[in-house]
Length: 579
Image (tube, rainbow, N blue to C red; front, side, top):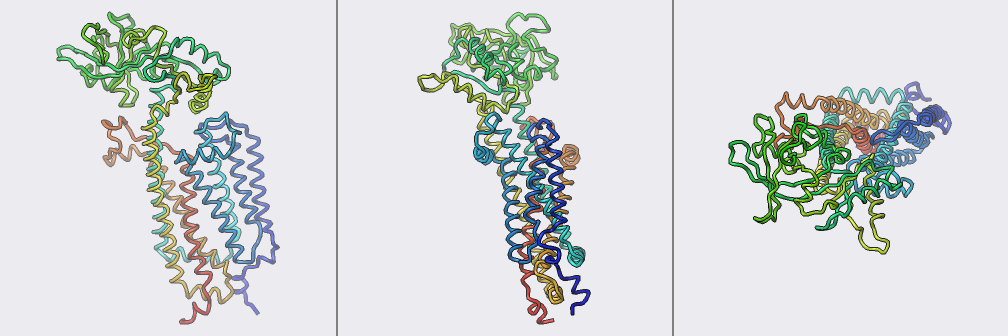
């Protein structure tokens, strides 16, 4: 007749019925509550995330699906292993897709294309980020429901033995630190990479229009005023386009003789603009230095020669700055690259400088009035190199490009009349290099989480080897196969959860104060003379941080499955044979 100890050790899933009523009821109530609250919150979407209501519904969906999966009591160990395997694979797929879409645009585009054309009015990059966030929230809801299921399944001896196993083995705390360290490094490094990527993209967007219409080869955009009127009057484009501005861009040589200097001759990219229109298209007004207004006037008056505005870095290179004060009024000559001796070299008056924070732009570009640029390049006054198009939302640049290409393509067939490029395509090589660096760093640093999972597996295997006698005694007095498995699974889950929490808190704190930490340690992560940054840029991506934490917990849990299976399959006779 079994004694009290044996009764406490044995599990009795069949006595409570095949359905775990308490767990199913609590999960349904939580999921339904999230759905109702989500439906009652018709909030606007965040910049790169779904609306709050949609996010709550995703959380509820993940919890509800996991609740259905774990809502039945299974007495067969094989069936329970199959169920956990199915859930683990689903969780891994959610983590990989959500985190992978945030890192790899190609993976994101392929998943977006699988969704069909229901989202044809949403920009692809925006849809990628929102889909990634939805998958992340589904995964988080599923993981929360699983943790709730595990807590409800805890028996008295499970809790006691798991706590004892954690407390008496110091190596468990070292493994927690290993998991925390991997999470900490991932959050800090990826936050810096995300920040650098966003900062660079914002600088590039500030110097380039969202969409540019240019002539092919050495041709020119004819009668650009008519093209601009057509774009602004088109019903389909008017909803997304805010302004258009023509520009003339050519290459030339800049000659200056500041004060008593011998003078300088440097190559420069000359960009002729209509300042009134350009200020509505780009960020030139915010880039002007020393209180300069968006015009080509000198201290509010018309200069002797046409005004010229040059990059701050270029001004310093040719000694047009005296103790950081601009030598306004200096005469500058511009020469076309193929000019001959009989062509008059136009003279301009320096009226201001600009600083975009993009080194290549600030050290090479100069702005002059569009009329003078047309004369310098040999254009008629109705011709331009291209037209800059500003949008209400730059994320719709791809959609606007498709619409423009369709309207500029002749009905008889053939290529479009003009070339249409988005801001990302104009700097595609640079952005591709930054993206590749981010992907490689993510893969390399992501291996730290996998390595911490191997540490968890090794520590659990050592625990199984050390506690073989204890496992045999527990099984001999009534411990079940699933009960032994749960002891080690809970141990791995605790290691992953505590390690992820510690690493996440430490990583978020360091990211928030990273510039103060770098200053204290004397680190120069991004030297200003190379990267043109006065501080370390950081950005905390909600989806990325959530996936890092989920990955750490999921890897620790999966790593503990192998030792738990080995412990559960131990025979009491074999474990106690030599005792």
